[in-house]
Image 1 (cartoon, rainbow, N blue to C red):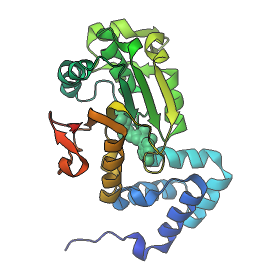
Image 2: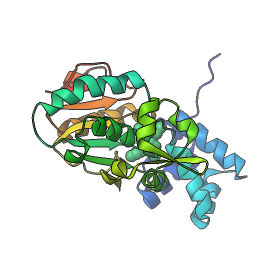
Image 3: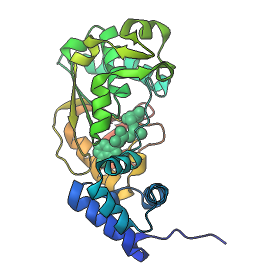
Image 4: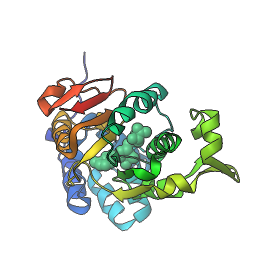
Amino acid sequence: MIEREETSAVDPDYLGFIHNIKQSTGIDLAEYKEAQMKRRLTTLRMKNGYGSFADFFAAMMKDKALFYEFLDRMTINVSEFWRNPNRWEVLRDIILPELQRSGRKLKLWSAACSTGEEPYTLAMILQDKGILSQTGITATDIDDGALAKAKQGLYLERSLKDVPTDVAARYFKPEGPMFKVSEELKRNIEYRKQNLLTDKFDTGYDLIICRNVMIYFTEEAKHKLYHKFAAALRPGGYLFVGSTEQIFTPSQYGFESTETFFYRKK
Ligand SMILES: C[S@@+](CC[C@H](N)C(=O)[O-])C[C@H]1O[C@@H](n2cnc3c(N)ncnc32)[C@H](O)[C@@H]1O
């Protein structure tokens, strides 16, 4: 027999929690896939010894550390430099040269950038092409803690495992047991807090990188987001998504699929 997931429709305690979180933080948990999110938050709630989501929320409002633990659990900050390296090669060798042909200063955005590995990967590629200082990179995330780590730019050696050795030598310096990303990369990235699901987007982007976050969103939330991304791109601009985040009917958003996981705005 298939066991059915309990949904918020029959779980007023969780539904109340969603409502309270939205009221107090603006984060709408209803736009994230429910089964996954509820499972993660139930584990956290039980680990902290709360019998209901109502008690858990009340405790969180008094205890900042618990609130940050909740944020940490709901956001999932896992990231890597050069995540799926062959896609970054496509960006470097095919997409960026095409964008450069316009001769314009490129406007680039790493959306849901987590702790910075993604915008720094982009910055390394641009610097190697000699065009970093003539481009604008914005990197955003909903999570202040992740953004603070991104700005700091200090990483464990193991997170450099996919960075080509010569690239790592150019852009990282050992600092105690950690590795620090170079100032020239940091200088060229502007970090900002932003909720992709509720905040307005800037426009005129040549490239938006949004990887490994849309998998957590409901179909409706994704649908709205694809429209917002399409409106934020210039014609001919690209959306670069994660390797499990294929868009099934890109044409309904005005996109055409060119390379795998790259969508060009028509
Ligand atoms: C798994 S990480 C992906 C990081 C990076 N893009 C990558 O592919 O390696 C997901 C990130 O999405 C962020 N996030 C989750 N919900 C968000 C939202 N509504 N708006 C903006 N960022 C969000 C989380 O804080 C987290 O840093």
